[in-house]
Length: 120
Image: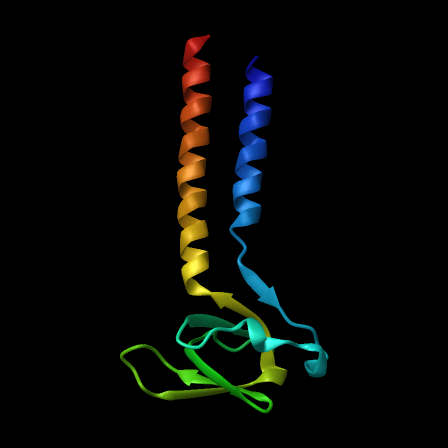
């Protein structure tokens, strides 16, 4: 009985961890990248290919080979990122929701394991 509960709990935990990766990957070939799924007015975290610090941006639009936005809702500093330097784009709101769901799920799994271990 203990092994089956432990197996189920580890399977659930791994599913929550896998689902928390809300990242859109882009290929090396810039001409194949489709940035049409980015929505104006949403905050995104852009991971750079060159290893520099991740850039937060309130996405505004696409101009040729550049992503254009601002540094934040209150900060109107313009941010221009070349498409050729983008490795991944994360939607901040989705990653927060999925991280919260992962924490809640892990707590639920821990409660199930704890209660089943005390029942024996």
